[in-house]
Length: 206
Image 1 (cartoon, rainbow, N blue to C red):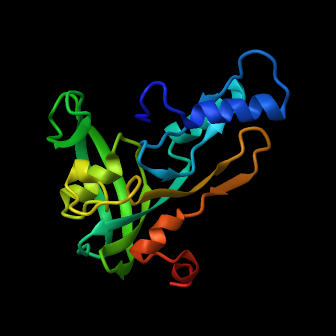
Image 2: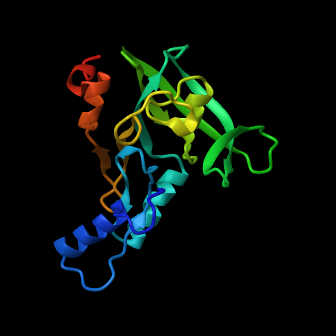
């Protein structure tokens, strides 16, 4: 999300891939089931048929999809493990989100669970299980507690990254919309994270 018009997007790449692989004439249908902000990396769910899109969307709506993220944040979270529950609202003018009072007419509840996996030179590596899917949710909720994501200047980070921010959708677990089997999709952490001290093969043993 947030890719300027005229610039290459994941959706355009996916359409070209499907058109070529399956020799599809004319327009290619793709249903966007999950989204990531432009500076975020990781797994994105795209359906090839409207039926699959509908079934997958229903799983998301019913919170039957397990969404695991990794984030490198500034500072050391205290407590090291916990749950964040806030009310958030959109700020269209500045294209960002804010923490809001529950009574605000535009406020929506945002929930996530986190755990500090290890401390790094620039802060800490967290694993995050997303319970709701609000815009910029992880970025806002962590920054609100004094743990902005590395590179995320929009939400108060002092550090920078060469490309994007240190937030990665690592894994999705859900039910296949047609086969009804359990489906786990993972995406490798970008190699640029190694400069932050994130070495996946070592962290997997923690």
